Image (cartoon, rainbow, N blue to C red; front, side):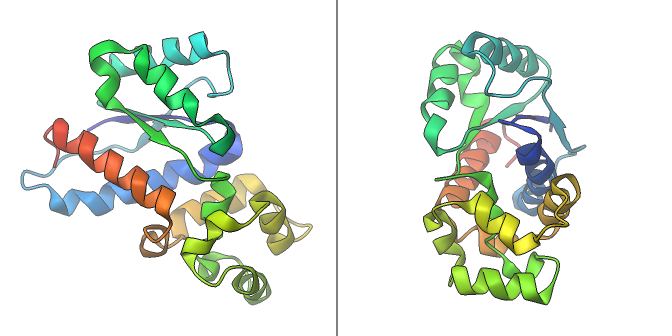
Length: 192
């Protein structure tokens, strides 16, 4: 099975690539025949590019990939449907990843995955349950405060993508919706 990912920017990509790889691996035991998965391939464009360019990139990727994941934050949710509407028969192989606010909220879902006990405690004070992450008004600010001045997104976000609990994330409604949509696409393609 092959999956490509288009995100709004690099920070989303740093987090989502390892997270998607882990989530797909978690779904694999549900497949009676099993499947080979080499990892998520980032696309060459960001989804903030002009719509025609995004559609062109997705169409090109769908010529070689089984599924294309397209990421947008809450303020751009209609882009996924807009791109899907222009894909014809391949539209059911496009799956949207759309957090309610921002991807950074998902990074806060598992305080234990954060780098220090102080960071973990500050996030636990902000968020009582993984479900609450989508209510945080400014997830980027909360994450920056949790990490402090030595924050390196390219390292920290990738590490969180590798470590955040999938069980905690499944309690986040937008994440659970994405996993359901991914599962449906995989079922249509007979991977599950």
